[in-house]
Image (cartoon, rainbow, N blue to C red; front, side):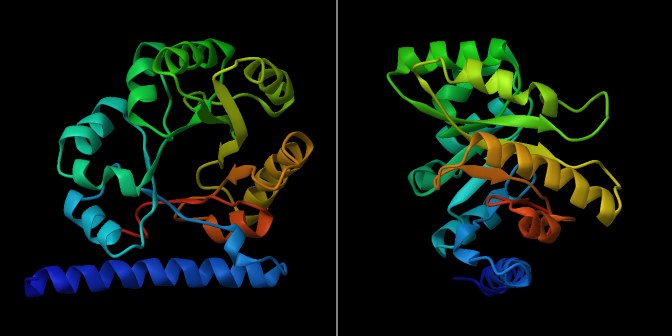
Length: 235
């Protein structure tokens, strides 16, 4: 392995270790088992070589992408295709109905279901592919007009509809906190998501995906089991 590659691998693994240490510290503050939390590596802007190094080192096992076509090219025919079987791949962006078929073909999980319409399309294509697709519902935790998601008030109704589809398996909620929010605002948004999650997904295998590079420690303290981390990991 070339010296530059060894150096970069060391830096990436150090970032990964720091993130996990901070997650463990957040868990310790609330007497939570850190084994309940796993990192979803947001690989949409990461260099393929960086992703490869982390997968081959056994560190990166869950990844997220937010553009269907880019992810399909990268993970099915591109540089990361040989490593695809070693990663659980999540779609974490806004999904358009015309991309539902490609999303079902490309991803293991869809984390951003926010309407009955997109759920119906996913179910239709999952049925055609002969697969049961794990999905998460995206909660809208901010007031941004450009942010997708179902309102906290409408989450239960959407979940009931999604549960009626035979080829979808609802597994939890995903939420994006308000941008530039204070720690108090973040705690409030995360606490609301956790309350809805506890109401709707009491099972031990359910997943709550809250937190990104700037706020994942607060999210873990609030109950997130799948923080989405990109820039801190691939810095």
